[in-house]
Length: 222
Image (tube, rainbow, N blue to C red; front, side, top):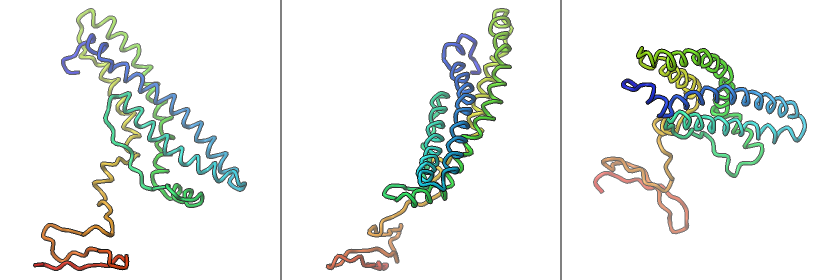
């Protein structure tokens, strides 16, 4: 935006994207807060009844899903490339009690909850700031720009900073797959030979004639 003018700013769609992101932060934040409060209050209140347990399970799973969808939605509005959220549990094949325990023991569940709850106060602040910027932007665009008074798109820059800042303020709460892959070594199969660079003293596994998995020690100089 260094060499851009107002014609460029109005035609490339970035100003509209930033306004849409700020409005989305506010309205979606209010929606998420309402849904979460209603969902958790109802499910916890009914936890002593049979129906409360599956309802709590649904609310916990929905919290994680909503946070991931919102993150990708806001990134798409702002034209950003964001990696997928790193999952830390696998619910496939788990029973009701196991699924509930995994969701309650997962840090991503609580991080997703904080992510969604923080969107409302951040969205309120961002929405109020955008309303303050609106007349200032109209002044710069409709009066100062025709008078060739160049403020170097000051209000457009402030709008972009506000939109990106409100997005980054909560985005850091959710881990991404790239960070998880860098922090953890990939899990290896028991049947995969543990080869290192020189291939010395590594332990592998093989299947014997009876179909049993047996360890095998590979020694140097084989």
